[in-house]
Each structure stands twice: as C-alpha cells, then as structure tokens.
Image (cartoon, rainbow, N blue to C red; front, side, top):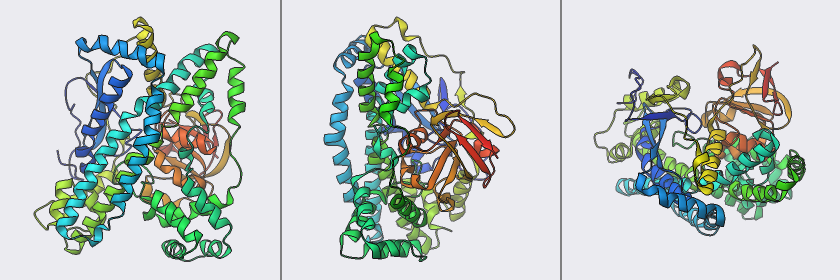
Length: 544
C-alpha cells in the first residue's frame, strides 16, 4: 500500500494473531526507508535478548501498517522451553546482566563511536554519484547494525529495574513513580551529560571573547562556525562536542527527524542555558533511597540494597544504547540522504531536498543516478501524510483481541522472576494513565517530582524546536532519549504517550524537571502558548 496523502487509510492485520500499536516510540507514521530497514535487525536483536535471559518467547516482531508501528510477541517452540527455564535460573543466580553491561562499556559502545566517526568523516556532498550511492548503502547497513545493537541490550536495561519494581512494590506498597526516583543519577546521558559537554562548557566559561560572541545577535549558524574556526581550546572543545553530538537526532528514531546541527538556533540556546546552569536539580538520590528503605520490612533490607544496586547498573544502559547506537546512526543516514536530496533537487527531481527522506533506499539511489524514481509530487505527498497523521488515529490493536499475559507464578523461581520483571518493566514503559480529566485539569503519571508554571509549547517534532523558549513546558506526543541535548531550555515535560519507564520520564527525572507522562491527549487539550502548571508529584497538568 502506497503511503501518500491521497491514500484512503485502511488498517488490515499484517498477519495472524494480535498486533499492538507502539505510539510511544513512533507517535507518527514512519518513512518508507525505516519501515523497510527496521523490522529485521529489531527482531534479530530482540531474539538474542530472549535467548540470553531465558525468556519464554522467541522474539518481538515489528511491522508497519500505513507507516504506523505494530508489534507482536512470537511464541517459543515447546521443545526450547526446558533450556530457557534453565537459562533463567542461571541469569538470576549469576546476575548475568552485569556481563552485558561490561560488554557494552568495554566493547560495544566504544566500537560504535569509532564507526560513527568514520562515517561522519566523509563529506557526502563531495562524492561522485556512484560514490554517494555506495555511501548511502554503507550508512544504511551501519544503521541496521546499530538497531540490532540497541535491541540486544534491552533485557539489561529493563530486567533489573523491573525486578526492583516487583519486589519493593510488594514490600512497601509505594507507587512506581517513587521507586523509580531511586534511579536518578544512574543514567547521566539521559540529561545530556558527557565529557565533551563538560569540556566545552568549561572552555566557554573562561573565554570572555567567546562568551560575548555566543551571546551576540548574529545568525546562530554563523556564531557556531565562528566559534569553531579558532585555534584555541574553546574552538577545539566546541568542535569536539559537535562532532560527538551534532549529528545525533534531536528527537525520535526515524530519519524524518532533524539532527542537532540542523537546528542551530535551538542548539545555541541550549548551550547558553547550560552555561547559566551551575546547580544540581531535584532531590538527592540518597535521600530518595533512604525514604523507601525505611518502609521496607527489616528482613528484606539487605535484599533491597542489592536490588537497588542491580537496578541502577541495568538502568545505566537504558538510554545509552540509543544515544550511542541508532540515534547517532539515524542522524548519519539522514545526512547522507539529504545530500542525495540536494543533488536530486538541483536536477528538478524534488520540490524540496528534504522530501528525499520519504523515499526508500533504492529510490534514493535512483534519484542520485537520475534514473526512474517516485515523482516529486509523490514524495511531497508522503511527507504530507507523515505531517498530517499521528498514532492517535491508528487502532491500538489489529487482528484478534489482545489476551492477558500468562501468569508466571507457576514457573520455576528463576523464570517466574525474570518474566515478572519483564512484564512489569514493559507495562511501566508503555502504559499511560487511565484517570479521567476535568475541564482544565489533565491527569497523567507522575514521572518526575516538583511543580512548575510556564508557557506550553506544543511541539510536533524536531522541526518545531526553534520555537522553544527558555523555561517553556514541552507538550508533545512522546520524546526519546535523543531529546537530552535540548533539556536545558525546558521547565517541564508533558506527553500524551508512555509510562514511567518511557524515555520522556527518564530524561525528566535525570535532568530534575517536573514531568507528567501518559496523559493520552495533552496535545489536543492544551493550546500552544497557554500558561500551565505541571505538578510532577500528583501527575496533574492544569491549564491556568
């Protein structure tokens, strides 16, 4: 089915069974490139997670219907169940998620950074047509590898925190929002932290001339270019930071989203805000842990200490696996595609160079070679469809009705523990609030504590980031970990989709700003520019 603005949208199940919509990671229809590239490495990586942790399913399959993301858990062959049960016991006994954290830190993350920088060192605009076609293929293959890498660490990121939620929740009766407050500081990358950022901020704070240039009223891109063009520490530090973060997407996962250097105004204002931010945000995590520990029965306190330590270890990988894997790779693929788009636009094949991101890979290559490919009107129509529709219009399920997951209580102890942790974590990641709203009060989930009043800025995606002013309240369908670059501009976050382990909730907690997620329809009920109060303690958002 062609994704165009003139297509009548019909939703047919892509196969037998029940298919569940994912509006958290994909709040809008994806590009044909993504729909074609993503499912295979996603499913392969998830299959490795299931095998490594002894999960009682084969994988989670992904597909796209009219560009909307639908997933399905695939059952495990009966003959494989005994081996999975034994593996789950081994995982719990040996805490094997630690093995994956070591692998991530020592091998996968550094290797990915090297691969990103090698591709990034190529100037796609300087390539011949044939060379650019080859480069597009290299970027696509790299992108697929990074999707696979992201997925294969999923168990590490969700099972230890899920295990904590299960046990400590039963012992104390405390809400997940309070329990997850104990994770603050375990994922510094979620708040944008990096050695490159620290170096840049330190250099700018001691360089009066650079600071003056930074605050000038010149065009943002010219300011950035001027600051990078020197030969001192400030230029070197800024260049190192932009090499590290400049080609990562600002939001989302698909190549329809901009990378940081495409939004120089927002990027520049975020750097200025970082310079002015000298304090820590949010409550002390040790205090949060102590408050929960005091409510744990004494007989379980040693186990509580162990659960918190393990959860923080796993949580540290939660957003890093995206930031250092596919979010960067997606930005590089977009960069290559835009080079192809500029070439095709000069030849009159596109109305706008950016329309190329709504082409499949083979169609991009055909445009570069000046061969038959979708018309400029068709690609413009695909973009129009993407901009006009959201996951709100898509059915939450396709195929047969959903069934409750099997009760894990009858499983052997290790498998029961792992399956409960996964089920709890996934529910906490995806499930929004079900509380009713009042006329001027929306009720979501308390993702990050504190109260804040400010101007609501309705944002559809990275193309709207230049509209964000310092202190605005971001109101959007969902965010990803990529959004961390622009966090300094925000006073609070409000989303339609996602639960307390969604990326939106994590970035709000890590940066220490109030967050309310899973409101279901804040983007429809809160006007752009309205003044709102966000109460991260109660999960309420009031239009003032």
